[in-house]
Length: 509
Image (cartoon, rainbow, N blue to C red; front, side):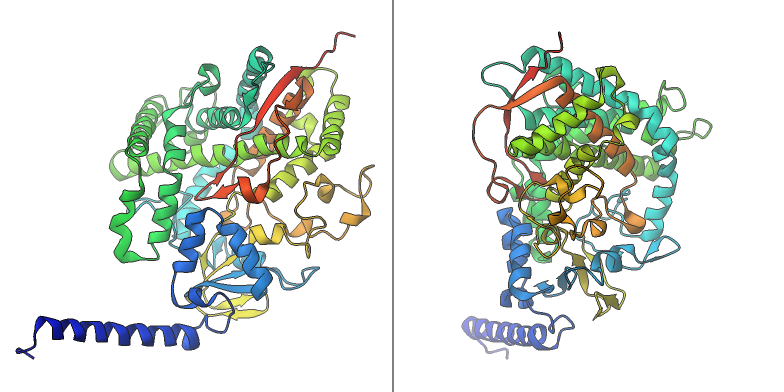
């Protein structure tokens, strides 16, 4: 061997690698626990299929098409499966099997390591350890009690009212206003104050904060980070995908988050209204330091993002989708305006009985499920939809494909709030009677169900109702938003610009 030339060494190395690759392909194709499930051939032996569709921003659509081609269980990567219920009418439900199964509030299907902050504290959103997650969730739960949510409603009205005032001043100009950025501002302003009493003043100043710049600046990078976890040797390359401007914004946002938390710690127990972080701070205990302080930074930042992102999408898309269906928009506007004689009477409690408003928001949630890319879990060795999934296999529910399948929803690609109306509603339609509405959980289920669900509902109802009570909203152009073309999913849904005019309703008579 000592007399081999460089060329001969190269041939040996290449040969060894070829043999390894061949055996690997044979194993994953015929002997791996996932080999009995259908899917794209390349996905059986490589993560390339998975990576390609994530990079394009059309991963949810690719998964939807894969279900159409391969059936109810699809192998999307060598060790990963996607499921949807096998029968119209749903006699079994993989959603419940995967996310709802637990023992004493500790999930059986553990969160997969598809996105993380490294080796440090993962907060509440990304924490894989179910015990740690449960501990943080229990500490935060009083912040989302019925009493606490009701006490925080004034903050929601504060920013929605400010938005309405701004639109009365600038909303009628010929160019119109770009609603996507405005709904981002409103939602993040609300979330920052509710999370840890930070006033970002984006609506007031009509400009984006460093938080907002950073969040969207690194959206694609977080996507790349998630993909490269499937290719460990490539992880060092992830920073090549981050523009310097986005990196600067991200560093600024971290600094602001840290400074805000420091201010919040100094003022613990002494604020006019409670925020979410109050539950993690004790006025009597010494201020947190070290690892405990870093953990608070992570959780507070996650609360800000979780309170902003899904709500902003509902603010925008409920109006966007409705305007593109004029008959539906008119029904929603009529319900709101006939229910309230005065703007001041519009409260979350008074809005709760409005069925068409509820249906419109639920329909928007159907279109824009926050985690459209999926929520992978690690099987403990269990039955999902009547099929045994081996221990160690990653498995997830196809939320996006489920909501867009005619097996479960009538006219699934059209915006139809009628899906969600009760039978005694005047606009109930028997064509939607067999929709699988009781099997859709827009805020998740099980131990990791969104703890801010009821607060989000209050925000969404109040914003949509106050805006549509106050204004006749008009699209600036006839440009049709096409969901498959104009929406992209990286780590977050990237939504198209949407230009509208706000004409104040004349109630002088």
